[in-house]
Image 1 (cartoon, rainbow, N blue to C red):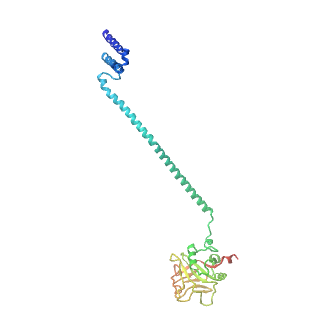
Image 2 (image 1 turned 135 degrees about the horizontal axis):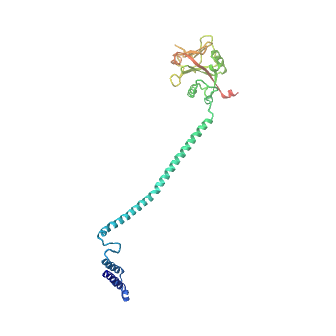
Image 3 (image 1 turned 45 degrees about the vertical axis):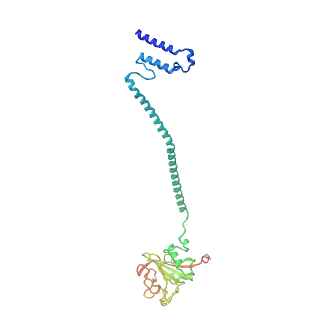
Length: 321
């Protein structure tokens, strides 16, 4: 026991003597004793020799502990690498976050714009519907330049007539001279009403199956005591049974334009009447005739009348007066 202490004190005394060299030797920078690292190394070596279980510099002389040293250093290096990897991941996350946020903001802006556009479009549709409801609908008779509503005249049929009428009445306002819905079913009343204007008159009738047909006559109508034809080559007949309105003008084979009696009104001749109305204006007949070269104008040669209208034409200034 005393020998161990003696050895230890001897080692400390030697180390102290080595650590206090001569003053002259301090000025010499090339002296080996001036290197403190070597002094500490020699001291640690002496101590490790004297006390094998003590080590300096964080190392141990135990064989098992010496074997574990690379593992510990490796673990430290691995942890350091993990920290570096985590830093890299953190840096990557930080670098990636602004574009992700910008994409989210862009999506939010796009969604906001879509919702705003939808709201604006829906509000504009509601505004248009409100305007349509508030705007009064134009009357058909005003749009078509008619003084009264018609059972048969549609915009398409009106344009068709405007292209077929004689130039003398084109552009004039249409005046309803007679209608069975307003004036009753009477041929005599129709003849009398035709005297209100001295110009061509358009006779429009229809059957119960939807066909619209008729013809152009000279007004006022003048009943004759005998079966005598009247009119000019401006007379024509028309029908809609072919889908689109179809017009039949005189062929020139005869001059049987129209016949007016107190109990009969007929257009065309030579074989059949193109159109014939009875006195009560409830029934009529139609067939092929030579005057206009037409076929049956109605859905059947004999038919029931839905309505009868007679239209005249005059200037708007004469209507105001």
